[in-house]
Length: 142
Image 1 (cartoon, rainbow, N blue to C red):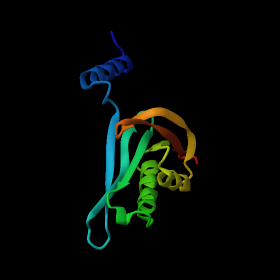
Image 2 (cartoon, rainbow, N blue to C red):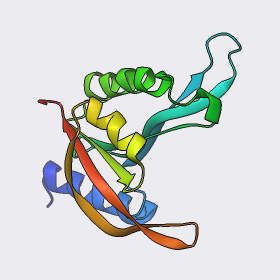
Image 3 (tube, rainbow, N blue to C red):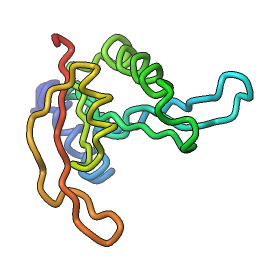
Image 4 (tube, one colour):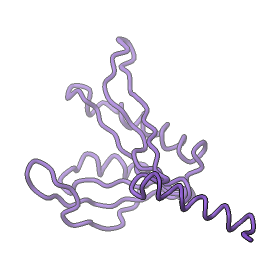
């Protein structure tokens, strides 16, 4: 006879197998960024890989309009989204994977006290070539 704890664990394992290990315990939470006056959507910021059990998520962001960049818009959005992650999503760790050539993005997250933790070699395949990703992390205690 199974006890409740074992039965619960068994049910969880069956759910993982049924849904597939690739998608189990991952969620996405994206916030759209609007231009203040026109209310045009100009980008997004949010969490595209969220491991609930481990209380960590990967942050991602983009401004789709070149003219809107370098005006502090993403810094304003990121401040709110980071706060939301720690306070409402119960995250302990937020991760960022940034291309080694993306100096603007590196500077942005360093402004929020993310710490550079390493480099994942040939981590992304983009524009026909493999690119390294710099790994950054921010803990709630930071």
